[in-house]
Length: 288
Image (cartoon, rainbow, N blue to C red; front, side, top):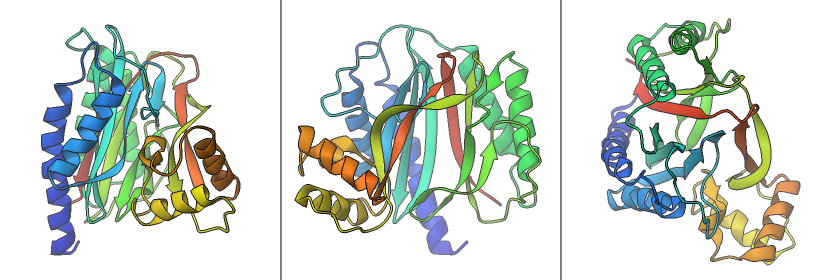
């Protein structure tokens, strides 16, 4: 890794450390999740970072890809298991992080298991280790708590302006022989549950990402695509970030047309198949 790349990753990490402390103060009962997301995204920008993707605030059985909608009314309540997933980037070099809070409780086994699995996996990350070895430690750690990992979710590599890059690091045991390399940025991301351990796609879309330029008839569609490519640098963006272009039915029509033409790709909200609650923990590491 070049010195300038490492410098940018370190700056992203420093901002992420500060934002993590800041965010945890607001994950409490009666907080509107829209306010929480905007506070976190605003704090990242205040500290000189770029928002690598819309802050995910996934509650209970929701695992990922829920970011507040426009005028989202959801308020955190006692007993909610809340996952907060955020990313900071400097010139495209991303630091990806997530934590969980059980509202009204200090801790839960689900959260402790996710955090411990991440901790154990991070300890063993070094050049030459194979993906299957990391995944085995993750699943074994979670199993010690009598819980299951989410089998069809994974940690991942990070590249410049790419949030999900190779390698994929599953939460569950596998035979993947890929060797981790020096200088790679790796996000160890663990999801735990007391359910069946699988997530499915819902029909709800709140986050999108640029795929390619396409000839779009609607002015709103052309404007959204231009913002996706330039203002958002090809990184994921939230529906609530583009209300300056359109709102209501016009916005929905433009987004639907862009998806149908493969100009944008949507991220469906992911839910645990048996509607069981899920916890999440995530840390980024630079491989030594």
